[in-house]
Length: 297
Ligand code: GDP
Image 1 (spheres, rainbow, N blue to C red):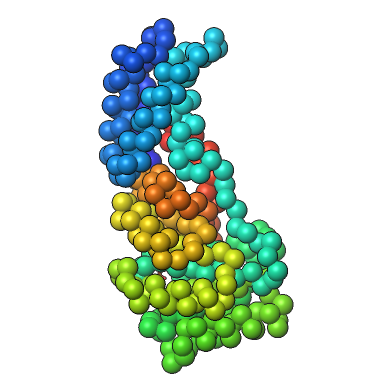
Image 2: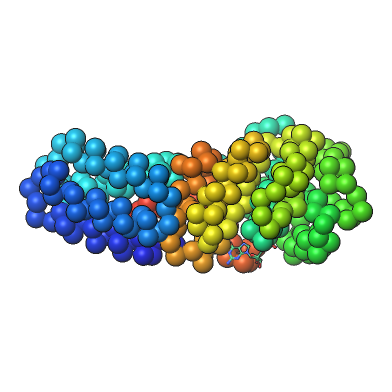
């Protein structure tokens, strides 16, 4: 992720080498390069504009510290702004609610919801020592139900049985009942997605939300879809009370535009990255400050 952005940004800093101080004149080229680098990384235009304006303002207002060269100051400003853009700190899952904590997974078909449900279940089981129950409410795709059951077997996490003949809301209610009775810590509800945003899918996700009152309503989205990912995040956020985003397929996304824009456009934090097809080792907590350092190398 971010390979070309990283290269382009580092290139832009070269213009500032050997300068005695940062001035309107000598940051112009560097700012233009930063702008181009972000646009090429598929960062949403309004985000790019705000970013460049902010860096410019800070660069001109900055007292150059004796210990840092103007070039280093500029890099630090870009680093801080990249971190801020992605949300400043790692937003952890809220696991403080009275158990069972319900996590609802929403997103388009193919975004990686089912795989990510299993990754999250394994994460919670191994890292947080939680007893996790999963359930699929995707009555439209029996294969999706079977996929979750199979992943559950692989990672030894219980999957509440559900059947395509049942109503999604009823499945979710029954699973929550079972999770309460059997004292599970967390219930992960994998929902049905569609190929495109449509009102029926949103209505169903809203009904599920009302029925099980999730503590976390996570929007799962494919990083490789770039600005589409950002627009879809906005559409879901308008329709549903999202608490965060999981950006999948980050391992195949060389540009990183969605990672950089989603927070600014939807207002919701990225909590995790999907970094591989495998359930084991396929999920990483999202740390904006580490991401920024990775970009600036
Ligand atoms: P769903 O329709 O949203 O439930 O999506 P699936 O969980 O079935 O995933 C769709 C495809 O994306 C599958 O082939 C997954 O293996 C793949 N996938 C999911 N997450 C990742 C990821 O983080 N990286 C990669 N490379 N592939 C992923």
